[in-house]
Length: 396
Ligand SMILES: Nc1ncnc2c1ncn2[C@@H]1O[C@H](COP(=O)(O)OP(=O)(O)O)[C@@H](O)[C@H]1O
Ligand SMILES: [Mg+2]
Image (cartoon, rainbow, N blue to C red; front, side, top):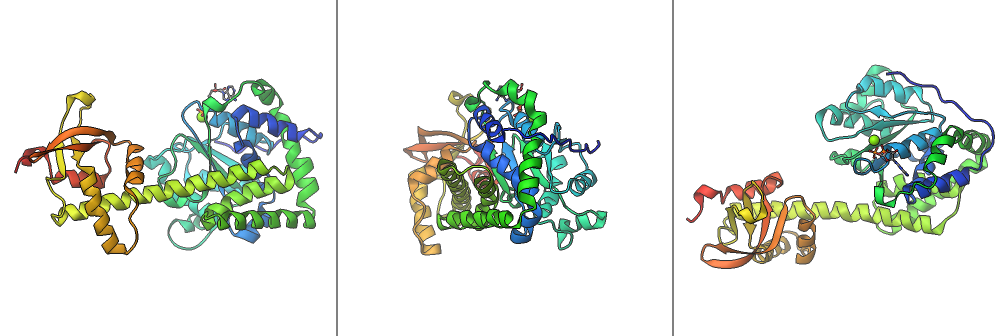
């Protein structure tokens, strides 16, 4: 693999028109966030001095949703025409070289997946976020190789990082083939080589060398960050999004709807991480209650049912009773109100292990309406619970 040189288009272009065309092509404000990330990258030395971090742009979506196409256009703003660096194939050494070579430019890695060949590089990206060269664990990796981090990072992939440390360092943009439009697709491909005019004529000549303007960007980021925090967004999420969206807002275009969209995107991250947390806590507690015999075969049953067409053992849960026991336990343990039944159930329905919530099953002698879980898809916690009620020990 080699590192290609940026190729800058110096003639002025109507970059606002380009950005609107990309927005139309991908069907949303993801375009603004990504271009904001480009602008922030050019100013990244200042931003880094102020915030001591720089967000990782993560473009997420199903196969063929347009991730690579979008990122190819975005990288053209740097004058870099690339297919992205394949994450499974590349080495840590190459990543370090690329992030050192591309000074105040973005580096794009494609095909993120939660498999060892890729996730072994998670620590590298986590430390690059803070441009750390020393410290504990993998943060010494750059130092030992004698590289500095000068570039910023974009990653695309069908899977989101399971590594929570990496996840929280990313600004995640969701791509969808449904929202896409063909209208400017060819135009954008044909004109992509001109997009770097924005970097050169606007970001570098107009903003980078003007102290007052840089200060304006930094202040705008700070204000947006504070506004997001006041709405309950976590410090890090607020900072990451504010760096991209606040730069866009200061440099390119003021758009109230865009800022509302950003807040909504941040709220969704907050809810999903809380909800994930909620279910973990619930199943962990249930496992504990089973081990203390406070929940037992009155509440759980492991069996099979051909009607679901699944070649899997199923865990049947008498959910209302389990919930009631859990809620009592939770109140006692934490002194706080437990999550309500409907929201726990709603989140369980979103999980890959969910099969059914409306079937009658006999638990010991009583027929109850049961929640049904596919044990092939279940978390280790749930599998652990089911082991207490495995098929062989049935009926005792
Ligand atoms: N906005 C768009 N309009 C029309 N076709 C598109 C658009 N974006 C992507 N495509 C096409 O869809 C296909 C998948 O796009 P790609 O960017 O490779 O998706 P991904 O990287 O998410 O798998 C490609 O053939 C690409 O040319
Ligand atoms: Mg792709």
